[in-house]
Length: 82
Image 1 (cartoon, rainbow, N blue to C red):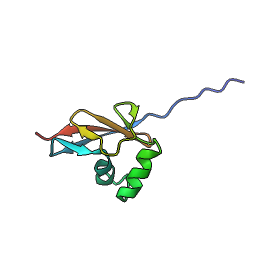
Image 2: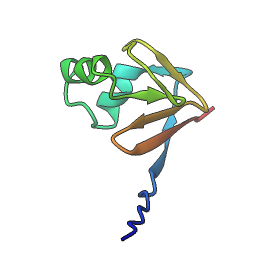
Image 3: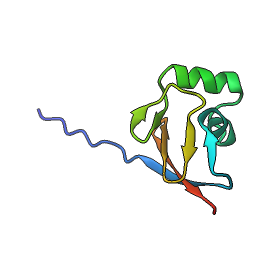
């Protein structure tokens, strides 16, 4: 018996920021992914977050225009309003 596995499509969302950058921990709180700064820190330290396809463990990482933050199967594409 053959089992065919079809991977689920990743969800994608564009997020517009009004500043030059946003820190990763602040982004997680802004999107409601983390409820507090401590929760954001735990997610980041537990290697649950990817920035541009690489695991990021720096909570102060600056997220800029055209970056992609991936968490829990959703890709957030950052767009600068300017």
